[in-house]
Length: 404
Ligand SMILES: *Cc1c(COP(=O)(O)O)cnc(C)c1O
Image (cartoon, rainbow, N blue to C red; front, side, top):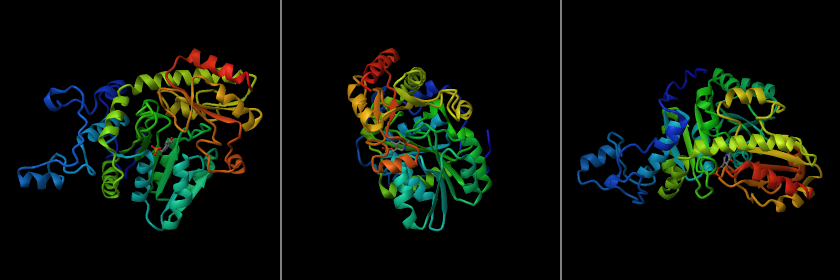
């Protein structure tokens, strides 16, 4: 474990296994009328007869809630569960993953600052880096994701924020989080990691030294593709600063979405264990398939960063893989409609298998040439394993690939 002296208040020791925290964290105190399940508190405001108590709660001197844009009991339970799973000191939540990422970067960066990241971040994050941060006077350096030396060189030139994502979307590249974090800390930077693809079951960046972790809770955390949400965990002072921006910007997670995400989180460990196993089995199967030109999955020994992944993802290599069909988009257009057990949709991490070609999904805004420059071939398919039986998914893939 590396040490980040700038942010000593980043982690909190874990006392129970992840599967136990997934079920119990945030839900241990008695609820209204002894309900065993957390109520969805839709009340916008919370009333106080005693004005002194009202003032103390409003000023954060006493526990309680004032107004729903700031805090809410259902939302707080969701935050506590993710905090426990990531072993973080603090957590706050957002209406979406992109709200979490935007508010975090806009809190940490000022005009004249520099952020270093990679070219393969999530599409929305990439838009922030390309479109929205430069006009604010923020210098953005996006490095080749596969070139660790180039990332280190960019860090050594000085930075305020290092922003990482691993494994990446859609080609499942892996960054050495511990090494890059230590390098950035040597320059006094804050390190933020998007842990959406891995989930805390597989990878906990705070234990590798990162200061903050963001998630699109919409994906694996919720797991049922029925609620949008985002969450930020890590150093308590930094989380408090981002929380303050969010309560003013107002991208607040609603109580109904928080309830669905909480309910989904209870099965996170079960789901992700199954998805890890299925992804590895499918990756091995497709590697040997004559119609498949290449398979990208960090769990395969042939993956260029398999060793790094094995070290930093103790729980497993994740539920997402990508494979390339020789013949490009035309063949993808023939094969994908034949799948019976997959949604063709711009989502991932759900209980149902979901597939998307980058040309219509994660990188739809780019031209074929721009995708090629990012190393994303037109014949690529991102395959997010659901919790279905792996044998059924393989049979479904084989039947569809017969049309290639
Ligand atoms: C989906 C996603 C996001 C954005 O989350 P939303 O909830 O859609 O705003 C950010 N990062 C990654 C890796 C994602 O997959």
